[in-house]
Length: 447
Ligand SMILES: [Zn+2]
Image 1: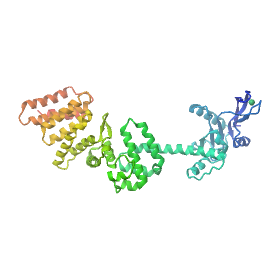
Image 2: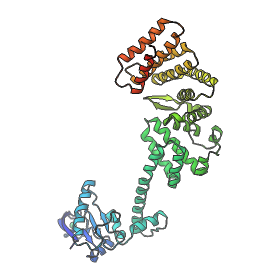
Image 3: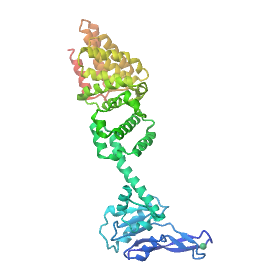
Image 4: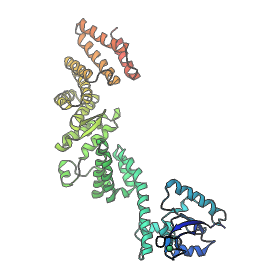
């Protein structure tokens, strides 16, 4: 015997009678075809009141074993149990079922379905997995109330399966930084191009209202998927699609241009060898930036910095690393100097901009200008606020002052040495070995 039942108390809502009923908790349909008929008839959880014969429904979990069915185990939890209790009941029932089990052992994991008790009347005779496939391909017709209930459950399962596949994909897309990776993921799962994915991404956005960078990435992803839907994945990534403000105007609702997005993506994962690409992306972005886009901001070092000054700063950094010619550096310095007022409300971002400006000006031999820039950076980002950045700026300032002093000013030379010495003497522990070494080297150069 593997099927088993328990006595359950019930209270009749009509006559108030308190009685007990034998409630089946485990049914092996090979062993008890009569109980399988009760399940098919939808009567397995319905009893007649012993006093007035009013039908009474008892809520209790039911495990149905089909030793030779397409799927071996169907489990209908009771409505009142939480997940933990449900799992406990399932394990207990399964233990009973296995005592006289004539089917495969052990039962394969994918031969198990959890489903509501009111769908068991249909499910008990079905290949559930095949029905799910048919339903997904719109080949499952539900033309009775019983089948309709079952079909609704199938739809729910399909929805859950879809979400389980989509979520990791969307997560990967949100953290991708290269076009090639985007293309690969989108091509591997065409369901990403379905309309409801857009609605899903839009609803996810509400969770990130406080996180502009993620919002920005979400919007980018939505725009990208929309373009792929409209123009085909291949065309979008081949780059032969008209882009820029004019093309964008035609495609209503697309919030950001691909140029802006490309620039942001490049900034997110800058490797030194990619500076030429970063530079090209930032130049394209700054050129095409609309008024609306220039008001967007990215979170950098804990500050929300508007795109235009941020991009200008990073473009200057990229130019310093890979100048095409000298005029390049002069133009970068001019641009960054002109845009410095945009950083007023963002001291950390400004400090970084001043450091970059100082470096450019020093290369251009404007040593006084460079000194002023580094001094400004040190005021805005003092030693304790960001020891690493402070140590770097101090190293640069020391070098700049001593470069000025080479023209014969001993007082300035002493000042430079003193500055580097003081910094070295009491260097915060957080300063990286590389910066530490650089500082020591610059100091040693004076002897
Ligand atoms: Zn009654």
